[in-house]
Image (cartoon, rainbow, N blue to C red; front, side, top):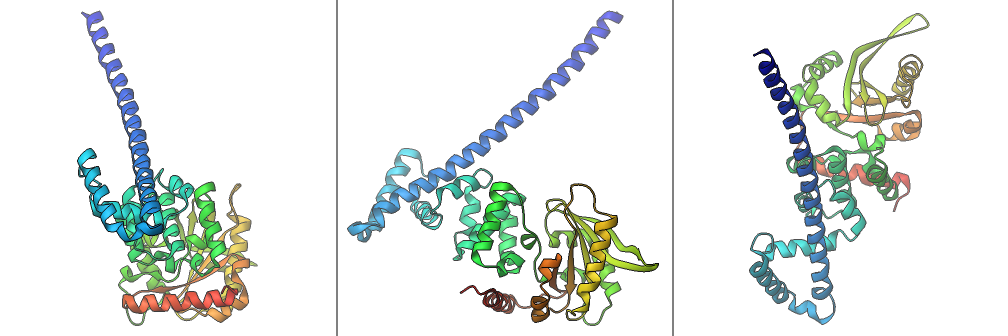
Length: 351
């Protein structure tokens, strides 16, 4: 009886382990198939759109475009079913191919993004903006809902990289796609939306810090992917004197400590020296092997663009950003961001 029980126990245990391993194999295989099907579907739609565009948008055939598309759609639905080949979908494929002319970029992005991701950015008129959102969606694993929220929240316009010349932006996005490396200017943005703090009117830096810690999850979501909280009021002793950094984070993808200092009013030049002290102390006492030098983020209620430009803070590893505890009208915010972008590009000498 003991041998039978022992044998039965062994069979049950072995079967469970075997089934567990087989389930993993099946799930992994299904995931690979789904990824491949998604990529092939997206590339198919791109090639269909490109092929139709070659005929419809060229030469004398352009005037017969509507009739040609309608006929092609009807025939495809008859042969392959109505799903995905109605006239509206065919025209979307044509727009897709006309909008994304680089097949290599489409092939790279479609390995991790669905057809719906591409459809979501088609209404955006700015090519660089489309490239930004799709690259970040691929890099951070955004779903469609998240992508839609990021576009609605004007992430590109708020990203510090948007202030740079187009060549630098394209290079930074290419590095993300091909090397998996991300620039700090893609990570940081301005303004940060801190409306979740519920602060209005007059409040102190301590109150702001308290609210950010209270709503830490929302604050990290606004900071962006890759941030991990390390400490608040980080104590540093220099020449026997105590200094306290408001917030300390670590960014996994940048492999850097991120020092955040909160300020209530406009940016002041004196803030640079204070942040440089924090960064050098962190570099000496906290930086680990394999990490890059710490970066500083000074969050101010108001910017001071001319001072920031003259101080060349980027070279010191410091970024300055504005924060908003109450969101303005979206049209007004868009206007302010557009003016800020135009000013930055004028300053950089980009035409």
